[in-house]
Image (cartoon, rainbow, N blue to C red):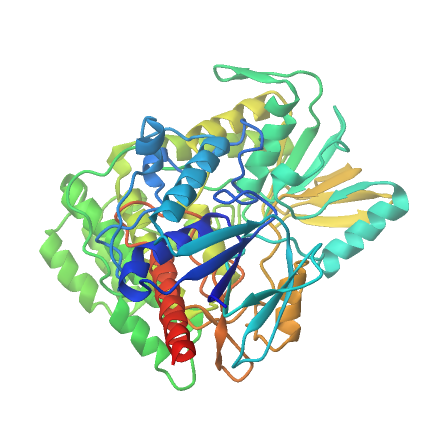
Length: 585
């Protein structure tokens, strides 16, 4: 029988893996024959999240020029570079456009078809539009992949899980709130991919509590306003009368920072500087492991500060008091936070030009408003200031920090599960909504259809309703009969509804303390409880401890997802070639 490779998941990750198989096959797998089985109920290319059949009102969260599915010479990998067009080049869009997700779905389908056409003629791809239920088989033998609606399993010499965002069972708090909703006839919408959520229970004019102020909230806001017939006339929202009133809060109490609205000019900061491969190797070599806050965060903080100040001193020297060379020397030598703070205070006169990551992460810490209306005014001013800053190249040190975040993430991927805080912090600073979405928030706020609740939002179930409060406005609370958890489900193995992932876990696959699937960072092979990599099972994606930033890669940023895809493809092809050789012998 010809060798069989099963890839579960045909979205962007599965498509990227197929592209790397096509790129590496001429070197590693010429003339041996191979059947590749893609298992996904959704069409190959876009998969579930980026499928073409969704509302045209939902946009991508990146400029079209910042989205690519193709490698370049900045990617550190063993396989060959195969360049291709970015989204804006392929779709003939302005590079600064935020394309709708249906266009991205078409781009992904084209990438999939191109990768498939680039395979050697003796490699065949079969798409199975169904779900994979479980994987069986011995460690040293062929695997079996059981599919929904099929009585016999697919035989597989190797199995690669390229799953994206998955549904999850409710956690204990969500389960209590859902039970309260059932008892009292309320509406509780748990974490979900917003485009798949049935929003019909959220009735016009009624208050709706929303917990979460990130990208899932933006989708919810769009579908409940423009999606119900409202429209914008400049900075004014004209309601249809079918909208509910959204009361939104979160841990930070503010929306994610706007996407930066200008291009980079001049020299880029020379990254990595304080957190590069050598520092990452040293962390991994520690016999007792490492603690993120104690051992990793100081390196992250110094790296981001270096990127910020390099840009400030080189692009805006009139706002600094010393030469860059002198500051760089002192910054490198500074050994504790107090010494570093003194250096920065002396060299950067305006506090607004100094990087304060703690203040960025907790913008409402200690802030109190005497009334809900005062807070509405205050948060609108905060959003307006953020929009102004993120679209003004005079503050291009922010773009330096963005490049630093990308560089740091490329190293942190190698460290495995570092806890959920970092991923949220990265998204908050680097992966916020397009500027026009924040302007829409302001218009909805002025129209009275969007109300801000504050930071450290709490939700309680009492008196047959849901009640939300925040210390940002002491003594104020809002009661409603509907609650929406506006975020994606947590990517945990133990609570995943996906039967394949649960079965894999039950079969001995290890999980981290945060509930992520443990994989070998070198090639994605699934690890067991003893740390042994499974020779025939691989996993890539956000539910693993080698998760990467975002779904897509910016051109010329050395994307770690490309590196992972290439390593997995090469390991798989080498294994299959050796198996073919043994069979022939």
